[in-house]
Length: 321
Image (cartoon, rainbow, N blue to C red; front, side, top):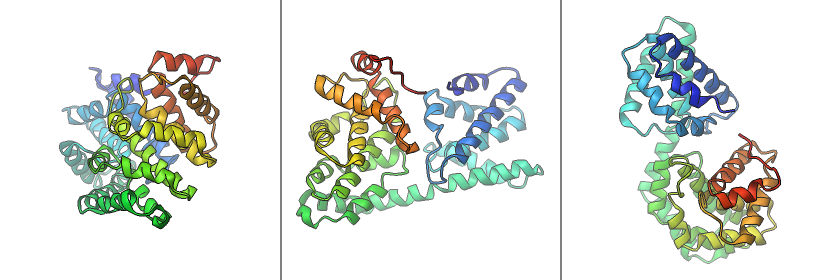
């Protein structure tokens, strides 16, 4: 059960005590989430809170002329929530970071400790800024030129590993910059590489781009990069990779790619629909926790269409929350 929609709604309650109780409960969930993921990973509850417009509502609580208790904890919540994720709104970023710096001198030791953690998590965004700067000076363009034109035998794993590093952890701004470089045709060309590790790096990079960019739009809407990928023949090429690869990581990643990029759309090819959905359901309990999250999201994306949903739920299967 997702607790956040109800808790976020209580932040707007006229009774300050109820709002205070809600924000501390949100903090406790966020604290646990931070402890279950590495410092370089996006917070596991970011998507759930973003979906119910919780980020803006927590910031609104922070900005209200209400209690110091709520203001301080709202700032800490946002610091935790934006772990390894850029606060894109410059006003929010400035106000939250300035307030957290003030809290470092608070008389409450617990508050100071949580503030240090929040600032530590926010500091992980430096890596994102470095990648943004690297994209702007042409590193990605140089890699894509190599992927597009060099003999595949001379494209080593190190090249695709560098590109993959630009896609995780990341945010929508980074992916917008990547998409501006028209990466899909050169990346899709690498599916013909004889080194399976190069191929798996490539499909993982595409998967990251599709997943993290999808989080910035509504679940029931077409994927923001669907048209771009489709125009490059990407749907067919990813499906072809899914069918032919013997590499289990590539097979999993390609099925996730298809599930996410075909969000809220019927998979009209009935064979593709059945194959992809059956495979996604078969790996829903994969031992890799990060993969589980992606598989669940891919199935949720497909389930936004009634035909796909019937295929998913036809045997009584239900997508875990």
